[in-house]
Image (tube, helix red, strand yellow):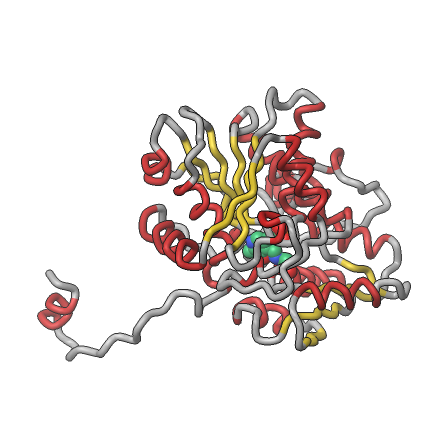
Amino acid sequence: MSINANSASANASRGVIERYRGFLPVSEATPVISLGEGSTPLVYAAKLSARIGNGCAVYIKNEGLNPTGSFKDRGMTVAVSKAIEKGARALICASTGNTSASAAAYAAKAGIPCAVILPARKIASGKLLQAFVHGAKIVAIDGNFDDALRIVLELGERNEFAIVNSINPDRIAGQKTAAFEIIDLLGDAPNIHILPLGNAGNISAYWAGYREYQACGKSTRLPAMIGIQAAGAAPIFHNRVIENPQTIATAIRIGNPASWKQARAAVDESRGAVDIATDEEILAAQKWLAQNEGLFVEPASAAPIAGLVKHEAIPGDSLIVCTVTGHGLKDPDAQKFDWMEPVAPNADNVLRAIGF
Ligand code: F0G
């Protein structure tokens, strides 16, 4: 069978570098390390729209459908491609889980080692499994994400490591392509964009993407950016460092976000907001989304849904985009379920068991 590489490469599965090359810090000399990231679904959420009411339409950007199951892949393809171009010998990152899974996968594709520094016992098991299976060198520290990032910054001063956390501008450049995709599909920017807020890279990336596309005439307006933090890990909301952040949404368990200033600027310039959701609200939103919209997302990704449904100041007829950042299967322990008692193997028993 012959494969037409040109037609294969003409479609969207080429990844964000090929799709948005002109907007990214790459040249012909940059080796493209891609897993076919981006081009994720933007799904109209009919029941969520009805719940918000007042003529609002809500679309969900499902970033859990990236190659490693989170939005990190958009930035990682750029960061790793640039690191290889510059001759880096190894990647290093601190992570609450998803960055490490993504870095480990792209390092494997690039053929270089990857070290990941994680807060011990606070990583969802699916993410740790990913880093392990992709062959990363994993170090768990007795500390939180903020401690891990401090160590990585120190080690990054040695030339052999390329830091692939979102403090790396190549990560932010790649992540802004999600805003491009939204405008390319909707024909304009939404009125409101709502997303989870952790280390604060992603909100800054979206804001950069929205502004860049507007500046080149691809959209007529800018959305209000709304970031949702977990109530127990809400430094930007409270405007102070949280020494011991706590939340079931481990992906955003961060007390001193690296891109705090940029996130604040995005929220202020866009006349948006920072809000919080409790763990109970996050878990309820996670279940509601799974049972009403058919989307299973990890707890951090349910935070914006939790924030949206209780937000009181949404103008009527708003076009709202909500980014869900990671797949629900990454964190199989967040929702509790019971192993069911087996029944005898016949149709009558099965019918009774399902209540028909
Ligand atoms: N949602 C998920 C699923 C995440 O993994 C993260 C961050 C965020 C939201 C917040 O994005 O940091 O750009 O504000 N995870 C990082 C990590 C910190 O290490 O995987 P942010």
